[in-house]
Image (cartoon, rainbow, N blue to C red; front, side, top):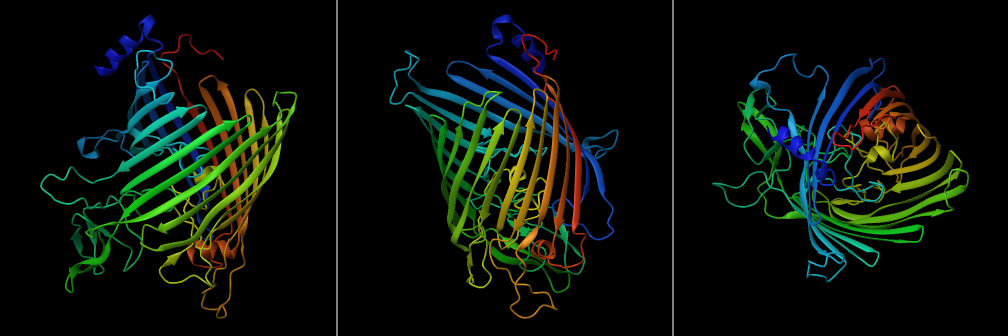
Length: 507
């Protein structure tokens, strides 16, 4: 009923500037044989199709903007052909936010004018900044990423400043006290070390053995995080100077403290885990700046050079309470374009723990926050995604090629991956104090995207990882047990109709 009323109202001629209704159906068929981690020798490849169905409603007036995005994400065959109430509702709200104008120098009816533009954006929303290196919507994943947050956005004389905050809780605290936060969803019960089913109480997250990684019902993030933040505060400042854009980011995220604990007894066995009933948080600070520029006009027949340089640091304490010492991330790249062709090199470093000097209770691993790792460190998602990353950090030297015409865009990327810090080889047959070779492997990524029409794109990708024993050991703790050649291919169809377009798309 609501959707019918919305469409009838939006179809009025005078409503086109106020209402929007955009759909998306995106299917991706994948053949995986060593994506994210090297596959066991002689293992069979995985083959499946996933689908995102999203509907985004928008309303815009001169002083308020409202948007709600509802989506359904699933794998084909995940549900039975007919379902009942027990299967539950897989629909979810991806975005639900409103942005209210507080100041606008162009609007004479608004008396409050300390700066040219000021607005408040509040609700469930995507945070997309710069090249989504540290903050992004993770759109490659079918489910994407969003935050429950409030942003105060100001613009004045060419400068733009965003101030953001978020505070997470599990419930509305009815009948409880305090604001301790359990940063993950867990099953209602789990098996003890004697295979006895034990009920998991509120505020407890089981781990894979004593001191192991949390065992969650649903993963929290794609950059190997083991818990969601309790709160965050951020500031993002940017300005463009001719063809150069400057931006600076300060991001503080706070993680609920916990203590090691267990459930059960000697008869039923034990479940080890973390109890989130400790007051206070571990706070991490991330800060740095980025420059992006262009030389040349960039017309179809002319040449241009695009370049990027950035540097970030981290300090404070990580989510597990380790003191962060000397964590950093820096890099740069350049692309030379001539007509439809572009080519360029780049180099990036994410710091890691130097096994020969790191002290107990410390870490030097840089965490790329809540960005989109898939876009930067290889399409096969070996680094800073759900399968984690090497403790020794990462060096990435790459060379990229691109061809872009009106309908067809193709890219080919070559990555050389290596450890950024010394890492011990602790295999049983390795000499005491032996270090791993720094080379992790070479990755080759090819993508072709073709625009069938204004709202439909067809994309094909094929990637190969040529890994080493250092990659196998630093990610999976073994050597010579995995196939060091990993492959991945996909075919994706992305259909995004604009239901309220004034003229139907024909091309």
